Image (cartoon, rainbow, N blue to C red; front, top):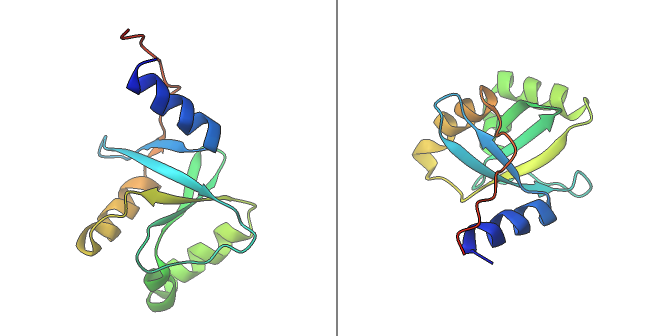
Length: 116
C-alpha cells in the first residue's frame, strides 16, 4: 500500500476533515468531541455545521473580541462538530488562517491513486 493510500485511509478512520480555504490552501482538521471540549490559545479550533465553518479561532479570540465571542456562542448552539487545525499555525498566522477556513469549504472526496 502506498503512503498516500495509508494517510487517506488513516484520515478517514479517525474522522479527519480535509478543508479548502477561500485562498485555495488545503487544511487538515482533526475531530474533537464537544463533550469536554476546551478552547486553547495555541490552537485554531473550527466549528463546522454541515459543509460550513461557522467559526474558527482560538481562546484569545473568544476572550478579547466581542464579535468573535458572539459568533462562537451562536455556532456552539447550532449543534456543530468541533475540529482542531493540524498542524498548529504560528501565532501571527492564526487570524488569517481562521478567516480563510471560515470562507472555505470541505475538500471534495479524496481520490486514491495506486502508486504501487
